[in-house]
Image (cartoon, rainbow, N blue to C red):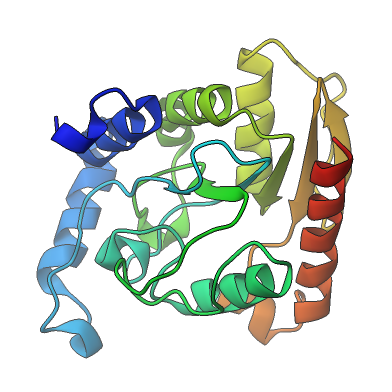
Length: 231
């Protein structure tokens, strides 16, 4: 264990995440991508491991994505860093007062998050951005510990897989929901003492087609900040 992890349970969790090899298919894929690399990043050393969470240790807002992008976080080693989704999300978070700058390009770019933390339903880059159900289930233990340690008042789920992952996590922590709340952009549900807020994922598929606009993402983040302040 790295010395910096001693005594800090959040950093201990991040260290465990980075060392995880529980899903053979995901381990093989993330390492293959790191070896072969995209031509634009041929001279870079890819992270090629499970990607830890990033942000404040105990903030009122937790943002949950799907999984690291193969040539984004799987390359840089930081959630939502180094790809188009990161550009869209971080610009919106900066406007909402949740990020110190609108850019997220590499781990040492000076970015800090303000009162929030970013994680994912799955911590390894999956082939085709589609983690299998058993892979999602194995990774849920990390999200359960993250929620317990960070204790957010508001959880923003980026996409349906993140939404389902959060619902499964909160059910495991003693707050099952029946009937299951439906995912949708701007959907909100109170679960115990927390709010779960849904947003379309800032993927190129959503942003290039206009399914998700900057104004739509701004509205969700502003709502999340308001919920956190009220709590």
